[in-house]
Amino acid sequence: MEDIPKRIPTTTTDRVMGFLDCVIDLMIQLELEFTETLDVGRLSKAIDFTLDAEPVLGCRLVSKWRRPYWERLDKDVRDAFFFTEDRAEYEAFKNASIDTYQGPQIKACLYRSSIEDRLLLKMTHDVADAGGVKETAGVISSIYSRLAGEPAYRPEPNLSGSRNLRQVMRHIPWHAYPRIYLNHIQTLLSQIQLQRNHTLPLGDGPRTPFIFVHRIISQDQVARLSQYGRAHHATLNDLMIAAFFRALAVETDLDPKAHFKLTTTVDLRRWYLPSGRGEAIANLSALEYQNLRTDLGVDFSSTLERVAANTKRRKASWLGLSDWVGGIPLFLLPNDWGKGLYRKILQSAIDKRCGPPIMTNMGPISTECVTFDTPPRNAWLLPPPAYPPWFLCGLAGYEGTLSLSAGVYPYQRDIVEQFFDQILSQLPV
Image (cartoon, rainbow, N blue to C red):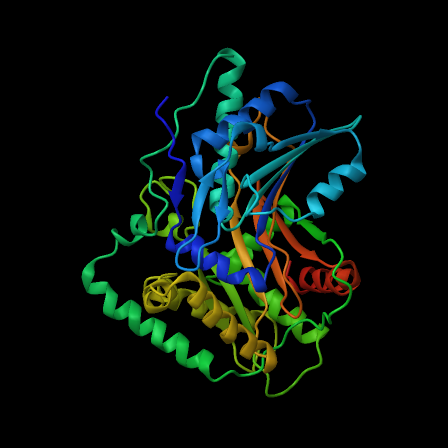
């Protein structure tokens, strides 16, 4: 096995994610429900070996004012796997944060009851986005399967795969950059206006451990929604955004001057990489924005029409690349300077009630990447919890179902539960 370097440099996307630690708790989780029992010993080995297979996962983040770096952990201090038969212990694990600066960058808990095995993979967002979490699950499941027939198997470390955004940008022709930069300027001008936005009235109560609010949309309903979307030239994501906006109009005090604005995400792997996968575990996502201004339209179909038109326009003009190209001057600053400037921008948005809610589409979970001898009965992703006054929820798909999730403080639970019910009631079928 080739030696793994003691230090691994951070990428631009690593550092930019760190800018957001004042907005969200930088963790993403993948939860899997199995009707069959998993092999605890083999699973423990697979997770430990993954810390070498993708070396950045076996690191802690070391803070430096100019450029942080990843430092490899010794094997005796990098425990990443926990097993429990106590549901309360499992829930406490799920609701707890993960320390990027202590490492490792992934932890896992297997909960066993009389009726199921439930596996939770928890990763830091500093090191990977939802696409990276799914790829990590695929690495673990592949090692787990290999160990069944080859107990002595050890994976080779991925030392050549890029974690940098350059693996995406090299697929972009040079003549596209002026258009991408103009897209960034147009978005920036709309944000500089600092127009008030509708958002949930979450308040700011006790900062106790997070809990997760969760909904599953069944295969039958997702199939009907897909059919409705095709008839209206819209995607499932468009439908959920439209339902989000209309639920927001019901659950908030309508300010006639406030905008209906939503921050969304796009996985650049799926758009620009021929394989649809990164070369290594990384953050390869970007932000996009939906703004319907003050008018939702008279009904769901009119809201959906406006959302779908915005989506179509952005898909036609280098989706997801605007902020990365336009933000280059900020990214070139020393890390502490860039983080300080970004926090001032965010605080200004908070002070003027201009921080829009966030809905991150974390994409489909392929059966292949979560099969541990057998595929799970259910699978979903849990997005990063947001700090007040921000609100963030996430979508994910598995085997024809769709999940809607959010991490919230306990005092916010009833508000978000009611909001999720309202989103589902707004869906047309």
